Image 1 (cartoon, rainbow, N blue to C red):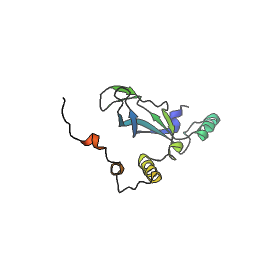
Image 2: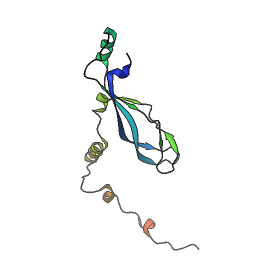
Image 3: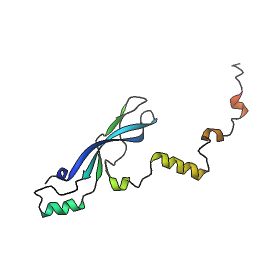
Image 4: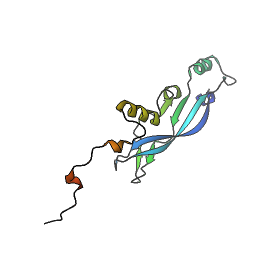
Length: 135
């Protein structure tokens, strides 16, 4: 039996952050994936070998796109990750980006009410003085 008979497929789009190798700008990109979820019961006509295989299967995500187009320079670049297959049970334990940012802010002692820019020291006078012009 073909492996796809054991799964239901559903297309999915996930956000990811990548850096363009040409212009070196980082951006959020939508990447297409296929979520394969294990069916609740074995398909009809399965033999003992298929039953053993079905018992070991797990839900997973399979990346469909290998390239994205840079939002700044318009060049196509390959997604730098070697990983094109993710098991869903491994993905469930990872924190999302917002949660990670909150944890980093809490660990560094920053509060959510005050942005990071307010804590920066003022620039020295030599950078804020007006230009005297060329001589």
